[in-house]
Length: 94
Image 1 (cartoon, rainbow, N blue to C red):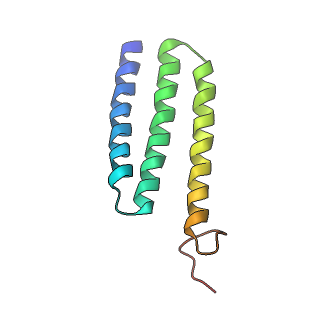
Image 2 (cartoon, rainbow, N blue to C red):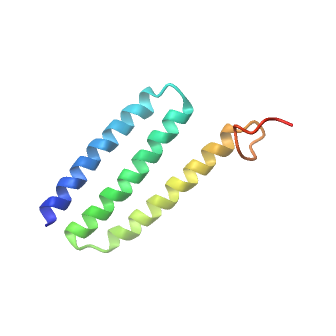
């Protein structure tokens, strides 16, 4: 069973590599942040698979922290992309 989990983790690492390429070549900032979200989500999944395959529950804590940091990165991007720094970048200016 652990060989199957490690195989899925390797597949997800290929997804992370594709996300890194998109971060480097992305035409827009939104494309880059979506790639960063892909990397964060795939990284969390890889860590959870490794925790299950190796029976190491400490890796689950690292995965939870990584998921939290990825969510904060998305919020920071949305705030920085808006004109006034307060919220939705697609909201019309008053």
